[in-house]
Length: 280
Picture 1 (tube, one colour):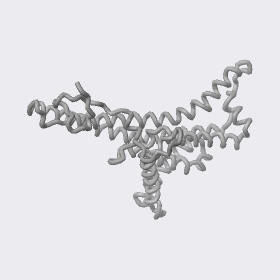
Picture 2 (cartoon, rainbow, N blue to C red):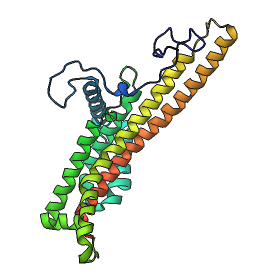
Picture 3 (tube, rainbow, N blue to C red):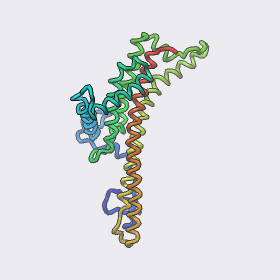
């Protein structure tokens, strides 16, 4: 049996024998519009366009909600204030304390920008979450990793910061040769890696799942099947179930997009709070 892409109109269930081909990871490797020919780069592609759109969406949110700020807030300003208050009370002050207020602008900006990049996967015509490209979460995680070290060093000095990260309190001296490499691996390699991979992997998997439901629904919609009206009606039923699954998972994915933005800024605040606290 030949296998044809489900997006081809001739390939339908109860059709001419073509099979369903599920979406692949090629979705996340768009053809570059301009290849610079530099090693390790993919050139100018759709990700750059979608990232710019996400940045404009994030900027537009703040512009239209705060451009006419008043003592008695309107609807837009109320939404912005609720978001800031939520992140202050549930993220920065919880993880850092009162001192976390000075990092609140950074966390609010990160949340809005990450959420905007995430929802690009649901925008018709774009349909590509920026964070499904590992490079974007990696840059954000690297930013927090550098800030974590800078904050710790400024507060406790280089020696105090790295000692706090490498030498847990109360550990006997004789076991330090074993503990220090483990702490170094955990704090300086695994921590930033998991910080970026958590966001990337969730958006990657979620978008691939939505693409699967969409492709399957298209493939199964064949009301004019040459096998007869009964099979045509059955195909419509199958397609409707795929559409329902697509809508349900779209709503769920929107929730996950917000959760992942929240988790990223929460972990960022926890790391900065740890750097400020120093040794335990």
